[in-house]
Image (cartoon, rainbow, N blue to C red):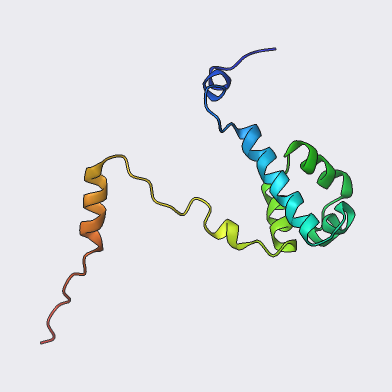
Length: 111
């Protein structure tokens, strides 16, 4: 088995792609159980095959489209609205520049 440098780096931090995917699957499962739904019921509501949904719960593997469909079925689509919406900054200067551009500028005088 070939070991990628990125795999070695990711093993040093506590949030790996596999852990994140597994965590999402566990949270979806928890929402499903809170609603009292079976795997078959949620898969049907989301338009997924039962084997695909079962694979997701056990491994975290799922397409983005299928994950969005699950979010619709669970009425959790707002979670996707905030995904990647937070702006990141590289330095304090970036924050200062960002704040300066937020300041309201005067409009032109009507003549």
